[in-house]
Image 1: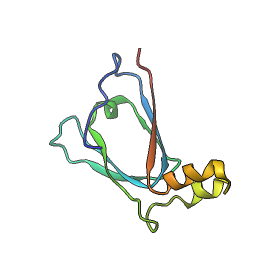
Image 2 (image 1 turned 180 degrees about the horizontal axis):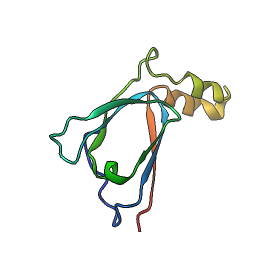
Image 3 (image 1 turned 30 degrees about the vertical axis):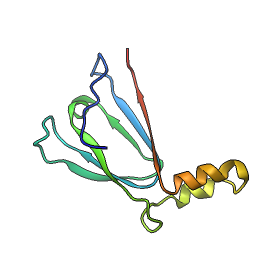
Length: 107
């Protein structure tokens, strides 16, 4: 996901909460201009990011998701799932993907 702003909300004073599940990823938090150098950090399964205040107006993105078994870091999540048929498709998906859940106030 390239550098972008979450700018569809009417009121930018409200924070955005982002929760990650699945493979580890690199999250970049830049500045108010695309020319500002970003700060890179890892997002692991179970991590939450709160963007509020000035951070709410900064460009951000996820340029890389680690899907290889050595670096994906999904073992803790995999251990929470049972190995029955209802969990199998989710387990197969989460080993090679990242799910991001955003919570925001739109109106």
